[in-house]
Image (cartoon, rainbow, N blue to C red; front, side, top):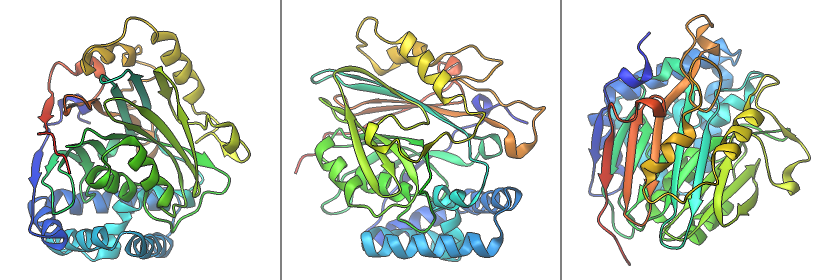
Length: 361
């Protein structure tokens, strides 16, 4: 088992003449990784007790929801499938993996996010924790803009058009999965919402509007940042509640909004979400950061046990083995993204950095 911080990072530059063409270009360029990731999710879902027919039905329903909500993005993901030599419904197992996982009784790994809001100097950081078996199933990316859209950079799982990153208008997005009693499969994939924020939002306000417009069916929190603001938009099966404050903000994997507490659940009874939030809250509050890398020490919980920074435990079964796969920092004002494989303690070992040229209407 290769430690996540030792995995080579692939960086892809994606462009095209239209949505379908850009999708095909992605599919052709990243075909091996896309197919491997689809196969990985098919195996994971089966291990979690989700039959193949349920996987495919949930995928098809989410793709239909995406086509109704964002036809251009649907054309793009259809192009990805074509370029990678896959059926679209099979690619949907990756695109709608959060929604499909609502059919499992056991929920996945957890993430931690910190923001510091200051006028003209908002900064953010996240550890993306996921199943360790997907250590090699993500890549860095820079996506060139189409007409009336924005260029963006960050990272995505193979086959997704967007995930966590920042666009040329200085709007960024993070994602933490949540769980609610009303969660279901079949809604617009939350990862499609992330992608649309990155290609269209020119402010946090516009990003929140995009989130509210999506008929989602699973639960997550999207932390939305621009140079001046930071808003955490909690989604509970289509309902959205926003949290905003000056200075420091933290989030892990349980609902914080008062109006979404009815039906709110931990991802798993053994979740350490509350402990991680307490850790973060105890380690923020000092001097205001001036650079996104200044946030890294906050994320460096002790290794060797569960926490904000998580190493894979080789003694656990594969389906229970999670780890910090990526540590990502966003600097909206400077239009800068920094991605490091693995835990934040190893961020200095390898980092991919992007700087986007400011893009205005």
